[in-house]
Length: 330
Image (cartoon, rainbow, N blue to C red; front, side):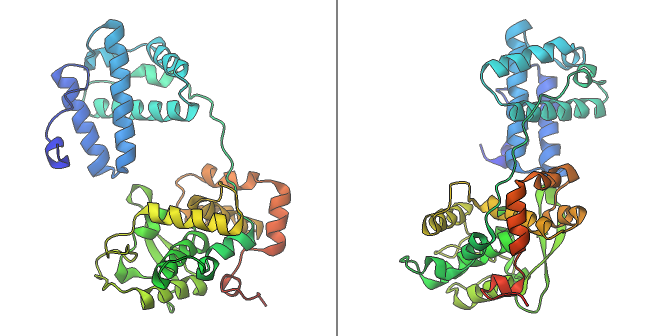
């Protein structure tokens, strides 16, 4: 069923009566259209709600809105215990609770009352995974087209990949943010910032180093496809939008060329951007804004990286324009 049709029909696989399914569909539409959540997040929240309602259905019959309002903490703990028994991670359980609380708030806004039990259930403990930044020299090497010069790829493709990777490391962008740039907003020489759309549709301005702008200009000069100003800046070999998988493939190729571990991913370049700035005594709140993190606690993960790695990065420092271009800073 196409998305447009799905928006008008409640999920027939969702356990519960018609009123509950209608509320769930209204909640899903609100997440996607009003709150502008990422499609993957909406899908995960919807899946978690379905699993919870299926659990209730198996225990005591078809769920209703009234039954949800009357839930007891033990009902939620039983569901979490069942999911734990299936070896579901604490991080997934945390997301599940976030989704259920979001649906409960939707029911409350509709005038059905509050699901008090959700306030009595504690968040599961989750081990916070530390980012693995790359050494400065490796991060810089990944931004250079010549690192892959021995590959049988067209020069414009190598220049394109290098420009995307330069944006990931030099400006700390997510893949989705870099590939979401329109051709009209290309950060070329003469521009010192680029406006990107991050998670939740939040817009922020990010500084662009001259070397990063030059990498984009080099790609534009070689690109054989005419770019629609309103269309994507980065395109594939047939002229369509560039797939994130192609960027991941390019980074994997660079890992092999540079002898880097599997942890050297596109997202690791973004981690490296933040870590190297922090090692240069960058202000944490400013780094939070550059990364587009909603919470400072997310950015604070970068303060916990290995001390030796921090000192090494401090000695080398985050490259400025000259270092990214392969020259030394004055």
